[in-house]
Length: 290
Image (cartoon, rainbow, N blue to C red; front, side):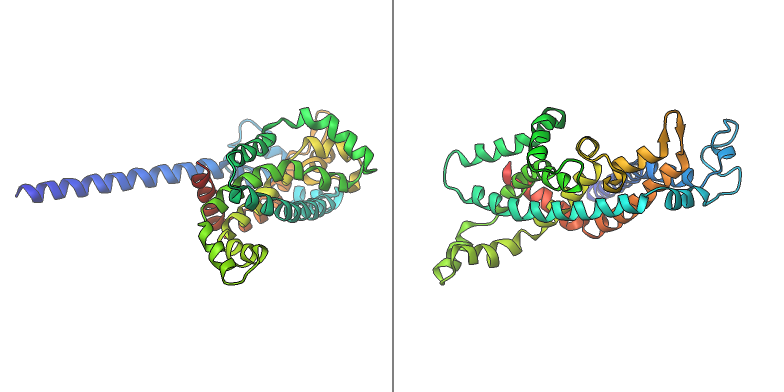
């Protein structure tokens, strides 16, 4: 009788714990999706519906409209901004992979007491505020002859993405036993071949995490994009959309929110397709470094 009561109580506590976890998860998901849902709702509202305080902000009091989306696509250079963001982010992500992967591998395999401290020092450069680095980087851009050019962002953005990517990959490579590569070299592989055919396939989640992180950092960066590119044809989404849809005290608010939705949906789709590998990359790297 007593074991049965204990079993029932244990099952009750387990069900309660499951309910609490699900409620917490759904609440967190709703809070996280709240801004996007609000942007979607706002993007298709009429002016008289949006700015009337007597109307419910959570529903349509007037019929929805696509006029603000049409205005964004026809009367602004949004397509140019989106294309600039895509190709700049792609080049930065590729460059980050090419430079951060061998650096992270080398630091993970260095049998020196200062290797960990060097990796930490590289990561700490990521924490330096962009406003502090703005002046020296502007000198670099001027010396390279890239003033008011998109390529200035391709040159500058890796200073943001590479340090954190090296730190992440350093931890991920550390999780791979070195004897696996040593065995491959004993079988006749060179160090590079062991790196290429043994280590790289095992850190695929970390590489995905680096790509996703690089894209997110590039798309959300504002200061460098504002400082180094002024012409409309060279702007990215983070700077082009606000400058064209905000003028003094005039806000094209629904068109701004339409831009948010158009940018967020593709990013969210790709991110969810890669979510498992992204989480695996971050968690494995964090555990290994710790």
